Image (cartoon, rainbow, N blue to C red):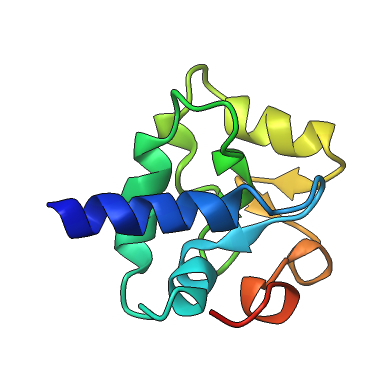
Length: 112
């Protein structure tokens, strides 16, 4: 169990660096952390972070730009509203300019 807590903390460190108006994917965070097959675990970390306002969980989506974590937010469309307030365009639960707003931690952050 201790390993997952450490992994979650690493996920939070990466997520906290996602710039305003940008998004990344569960898989991109997992890959950056050297655990490419752990995208689902990144999702669990994001789900567990909702009581921590320092973690912008709304900026983490699936690899196709879908707001798959939206049902874990309070309110019907809170995830979408938060992203739209940052200028991200969303239609039918999918980010429209995904390639433009995608932030890749493997390219933007120092190598671990």
